[in-house]
Amino acid sequence: MKKVAFYTLGCKLNFSETSSISRMFEDKGYKKVEFTDTPDIFIINTCSVTENADKKCKKIVREARKISNNAYVAIIGCYAQLKPKEISEIPGVDAVLGAAEKFQLIDLLDGFVRPEQPKVLASDIEVATGFNNAFSINDRTRTFLKVQDGCDYSCTFCTIPLARGNSRSNTIENIIKQAEEIVDSGVKEIVLTGVNTGDFGIRNGKREDRFIDLARELDKINGLERIRISSIEPNLLTDEVIEFVAQSNKFVPHFHIPLQSGSDNILKAMKRRYLSDLYVSRVNKIKSLMPHCCIGVDVIVGFPGETEEEFLKTYNFLNELDVSYLHVFTYSERANTPAAEMDDVIPLKERNKRSKMLRSLSEKKRRYFYEQHLNTIQEVLFEDDVENGMMHGFTKNYIRVAAKYDPVLINEIKQLALKEIDHNGHVTAEELTEILTH
Ligand code: SF4
Image (cartoon, rainbow, N blue to C red):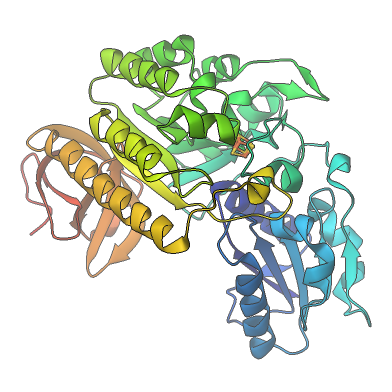
């Protein structure tokens, strides 16, 4: 039985795809093993957004070669689609597969016999028009279910449309079938995942459904406890979607909404499809219906032309906005994007300073959000992770709760009283009758 190991860089979508590809291997009789367990095949699923994607890829290939000099090393993922030739020149790589090929790799790679010369099987991104099902399972209490792929937007900083192609989606029928399978396997929470999840519903270039249609059908699944939307563009987060989530027992009160900048000038330069007013109106609508809703924000600092004044607009905008945490990205130039050609480049030192400022604002926001929930009773779904004798779980509204490790709690939903914020910034909790944390 041949052994195969995986290494995944990047986002939830990549993790769900690795998980599905690994099941394809298992179905064909391969054994999935750890990276260090001298596999016969290494599959490295790369990301183009990751800082220093090329260095990371080289390092992982080097590690794989240290573990086994005879193993087959194949590279897939966004970075493989963007730079197939460059990757094939990394010493030790046997094959590079693009977006249209990665799900066919078992058939395409001829029994994984190492070739004389690295194989490059990466068609132009226009060829990647099909939708490949993917979801992660067995890895966590939560499953990432891919419902959509690709993006038709043209944000000036982003390489994802080049790496993943046009927007396309699974059918609602297929998604429901997969969700039911996931629920039958015992998973309690499904995270709906895509590149532009709110754009759900395009098939063969035509809009056939809307995100709200999918949400309504998923909401009917028996036995599914929680549904979380991984991220949704503010212009696609309609009143209808917010109102639906507010009345649902399954969709949790948590939105992750990319903002990218609080300055309208920068939003225009980024070619985002909204201005800051629209963003405020989305947050207000959510909070008017779900005052306890968690709202996460993606923001980029150091985009070309972001003067000190423009940055402070973003800082003040976020400071005043009722949001719960920030994901801060330091802008870095990506080849073949319009932003990489723009003038008024911000020095790296300044970008890093701004990033630090927003990260500490995020800490402040998160802490404030958590504090609002101390001494309340919340449902916590515990995950399968142990760290220094503690385990963790999340409330519906994404508060990370720590409790003393107890294997019986894994994948269980418990009603707990939130007590205090510990030195790691996690909330400790008590069972209503029994103390869990000490
Ligand atoms: S919405 Fe913009 S940032 Fe997001 S994947 Fe599409 S082009 Fe990239």
